[in-house]
Amino acid sequence: MREENIRALLMRREYPALKVVLNSMNNVDLASLLENFTEKEYTILFRLIQKEKAAEVFTEMSSPMQETLINAFTRSEIKELFDDMYMDDTVDIIEEMPANVVEQILDVTDRETRQIINRLLKYPEDSAGSIMTVEYVDLKKNMTVEQALKKIKRVGIDQETIYTCYVIEQKRLLGIVTAKSLLLNESNVLIKDIMETNLIYVNTHEDKENVSKLFHKYGLLAIPVVDFEHCMVGIVTFDDAMEVWQDEVEEDMSIMAAMQPNEESYFGTSVISHAKHRILWLLFLMLSATITGAIITKYENAFQTLPLLVSFIPMLMDTGGNCGSQSSTLIIRGIAVDEIRFHDLFKVVFKEFRVAVLVGFVLAAVNGLRIMLIYHSLRMAVLIGLSLIATIILAKIVGCCLPLLAKKIGLDPAIMAAPLITTLVDTCSILIYFNIATHLFSL
Image 1 (cartoon, rainbow, N blue to C red):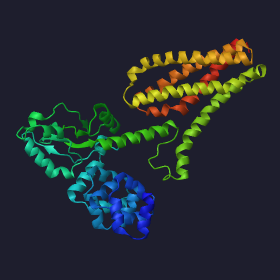
Image 2: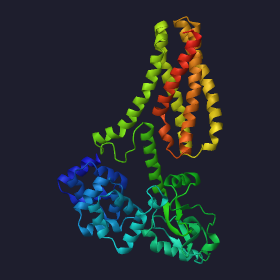
Image 3: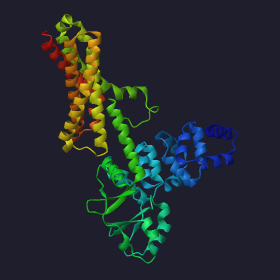
Image 4: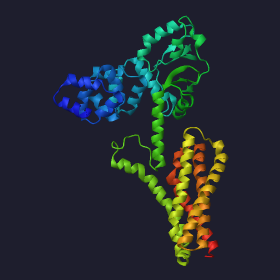
């Protein structure tokens, strides 16, 4: 409804009314709404957004939209936009832009800002330094609460957060002070008497995924970042940590579905790119499945002697694959939230083994009863029951071990998800099935 209203106002060129509507919207919702308009339309609409709001809306837009707007803006408009933007957001945008657009951005920034941008761009892509901001409130330990509050009022508007302030001396981090502590203490109390010195901080080269986990573990709003000399260089804020979490989840979902991770949106990715990201894994899994085919071919004589054996193969393979997927999914989740580690391997295996025995006996009993009612064959019921129990135990153990082993050797545990485990368990389940059948029926 709001989109239709904006389109109607735009067609009638009622810009004052448009300005009121646009500036009353949430920044994220507004950025999302603008994607539904043409380049010409959203360029006009963006220019109607208030200067203070425009920078925040711009950071929420997709890279193609950002590039279009920068190319459409004058030099002074680009300067106004990036002057109101936090440094970490500026760096994120620069990393996504082509060289000609980067030149336009850097051309309007002052020397000091360019130096900070260049320093942030030098940090490894997956490090804390790459996602930190250098805009934070720093205090001196000999300041009073009154002096600290005055400084926050003076500089706080340009900082990423004012809820946590950092006590620094000669660039070294001494402690932190929260806004709550400042508000609840008397104005003449010294900062050194109320600052928290039991600090949680990270190094500039710490993996950003590990940094994001600290927010979840300790319930933090921001984490200070220090260099190898323990000098404070910036902070990582909660919103940046959540972006890391989102990226990791999207990457893991792609890998678990046997696809290469892709940073572009679904509709923003071409058909050829979609195919490229999927085909390599599909080829690998298809060729791996030929092993299962070769094993089935080996037991061709058993089929001729007892054709009924063929009808139970899909059920055994599906059950094994499903059991392995259940275990791997739970373990991958446990690894992601730092609940399960490699030293828990034997504890996990023992637990999954007990689960597998219980599940196996229940499924074997149900299938045995079904076979007795339909085929009246005790030996066939025993064959399927034993095969199910063995397959489920194997699938559960494989499903819980592979993600932990992948993590141990530095691979993404999500690689060992459903498609790969299903292919591996399929092969093993066929071997188990025919070996038991050969002995039980003397084939």
